[in-house]
Amino acid sequence: MRDLAALEAVLFVTEAPVPLGELAEVLELPRLQVEELLSKLGQELAERESGLVLREVAGGWRLYSHPEAYPFLERFSTSATARKLSPAALETLSVIAYRQPVARTQITEIRGVDSDSAVRTLERLGLVEEKERLSIPGNPAVYVTTDLFLEKMGLNTLAGLPPLADHIPPSDTVEALEETLRPGNT
Image 1 (cartoon, rainbow, N blue to C red):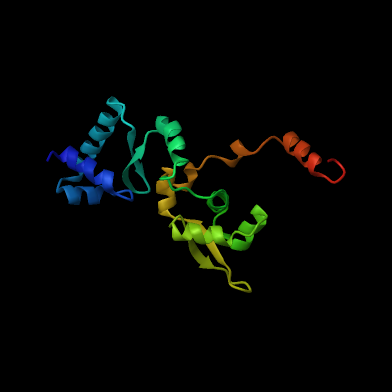
Image 2: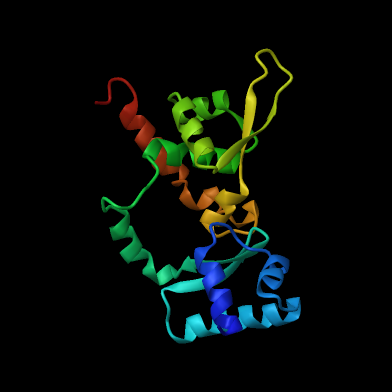
């Protein structure tokens, strides 16, 4: 089997980004040659307009779906065979990603509803983890995102998260919405 095909097969089956050193070891090739193969694979995927792209994320390499495939993946995500997070879990994951390290009580306060079940789900899926326990009464746990979260988001670091300001409406819009929710304005 060609080295390039072997590299592609390894990257296809991996569930986590594979570090360059591990790829070199598995393929029994020098690191420099593996770097060249990674570059060639990335170019070949782009040239044939593949539905996959090669990315270096979270300290390793992995294949991801091409950004232009998003509409198709979005439709697929609503199918019975696709597994997705609940809106509560997505909200909770967002709070943890942007506010970490954060305690469950803080998450609940931000969301305005109990978040224990969502946190447990995210822990079970390996997207968040307990970082430590605070030295205050009750010793609450604080949570952070994991490398798996970075991998699934296609990020090298949390700095790659989009700025929250891009998703917050202007203050006049918020004021108008709040005005409609005040008692006597219904």
